[in-house]
Structures are given as structure tokens and as C-alpha cells.
Amino acid sequence: MATVTLTSQSLGIAGVLLITIVTIETGGYYLTKVARGAVELTDFQKAFARAGHAHAGVFVILSLVALPYADAAGAHGFWGWLARTAIPIAAILMPAGFFFSSMGRGRTKPNSLIALLWIGALFLAAGALTLGILVLAAA
Image (cartoon, rainbow, N blue to C red; front, side, top):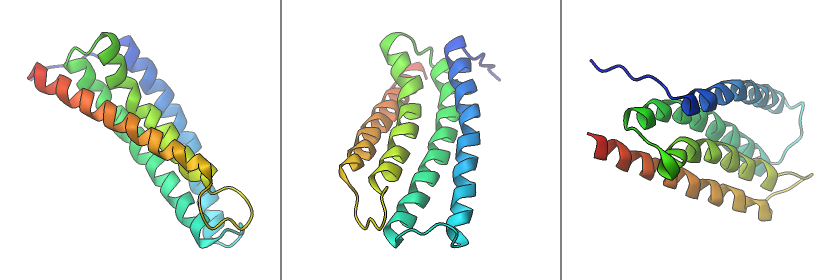
């Protein structure tokens, strides 16, 4: 069985990602307030709050899972940077798109900040595709 030692780049990214879990927990607490009726939101805003929270959690976990694969594939240079950071960038941008595009009293449709969601989706695709190709090339 092969052992993968994480690079300093991956360890640094992992450390930051693990710390961000506290912010995701804070978002979960906010959602419990929404569910109890302590925060007044439209149905649209509730849906976007749940989607933003879920995407943040899932993409942080996916980011952590991707790091050992980048290191095992020997990712370096620009492609190594993209393989390690594009998914974490998506973990910031996509939830931000949900949250910021739904802010404002009584909002029932997203504002122009929904663009952050689609920019994040591009980072997610770039990171996953790059990492997948690097892993296949190393196999």
C-alpha cells in the first residue's frame, strides 16, 4: 500500500479549510434560527440560504479530499496550483453567490451577484477536470 505525504502547499490549504468549518457551523446555527422563525425570510431566501450552506460544506469536504490526490499525482506548477485551489475557490464563490444574491428585505429573485455562483462553477469544473486528468496521467 502506497503512503502519500502531503506537500506543504496541501497542508497549508488543509489548515485553512479546516478552520473554515467554524464559519459553516455558524451558518448552520443561523439556519436553525430561520427554521424557528426567529429570522424573517422569503421562501426564495430560505432556499438560497440552505443551498449556500450545503454547497459550502460539501465543497470544503471535497477540497480536503482532493488534496492527497493532487499530491499523489505529483501535481506541481500552474496545474498543481489549479488542482489544489480551484475547488476551495469554488467553495467560497458558489455559496457567496447564493448568499449575496438573495440579501435584502423581501427579496424573491436573485440580484446580479448570482454571477458569483456561475464563476464558482467554472472554478469547480476547472479544478475537478485538472485534478482528474492529473490523476489519470499518474496512474
